[in-house]
Length: 228
Image (tube, rainbow, N blue to C red; front, top):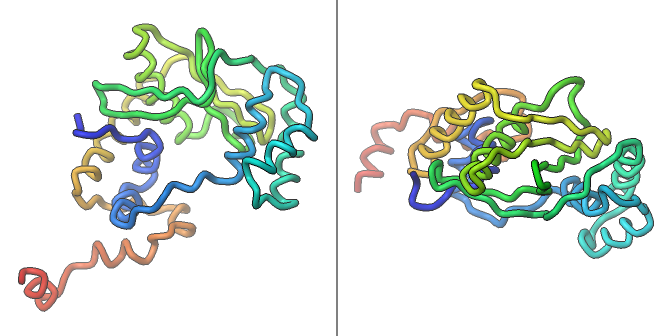
């Protein structure tokens, strides 16, 4: 186990590309919550109750003071989609959980008596759950099992389409993916340079150019200079 716990969001990022996480740790900056997630979270406060768009818009003026028409249009679309679904009311929200066994920590969006959910601003996939969300659910499932000594069924609430997808218990493939991501994250947090995982995410990665420099073999001059 690591000396300090690994945030679940970093575990998920490592599953996509560990080198991105390695480079971001060398240039630390405050985590900026995406506007879409902030909107989804504020709508989620009202799930299980009446969804009053005017009230939600007023709350967003406080939560997102820089929000413009694009953000308000996104909120309106989410509310319209969510009105087509019956939602459960949670017993608690924004619940911090952790696992000493796996050395991870995170925050669950909504906790129920027998389950938990994470909130997403996107629409649900045509079937199932996105791989990154399955990993996040699996990590939280282990945290809750350790803390409460009983399993909690997980779900993803895709507010972009007003859809709920369930994961009662992680399958063996989910558990393998979790362990692989955990090993990768532990290596990064120890300061080891990982190999990149190339894919579509590279196009929007802040560190796309820097990763090439990190992996480029050093010249003799660079090795002599760094040894001084």
